[in-house]
Length: 115
Image (tube, rainbow, N blue to C red):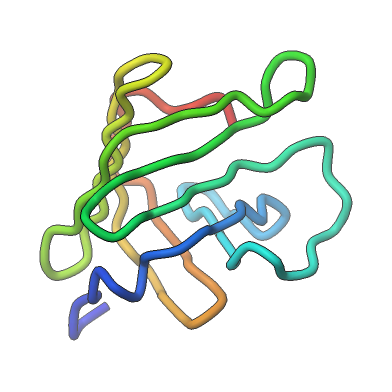
């Protein structure tokens, strides 16, 4: 995104719409929107001040709860640092951001939650 991304635009709850992923591109929509049936979806909650909560489908289809911190480096680099239940890091480029849709491109993987 040429003009950069405002952190406030990323804040909120996002659900992975994996049906639209292509290669390293991952598509998320705001929580509460209509989604096709799925056995489980990754969930990200980017809170004001950098708090990060999330979940991924666990081994028994029950969500595995995650927590950590998030940050945005200008103009468009999103960093997720997971601290529980295990530590790790994910880095993305924000490809596009709309009111109800977020497209991320994975640029580096330290530990990727099992999604």
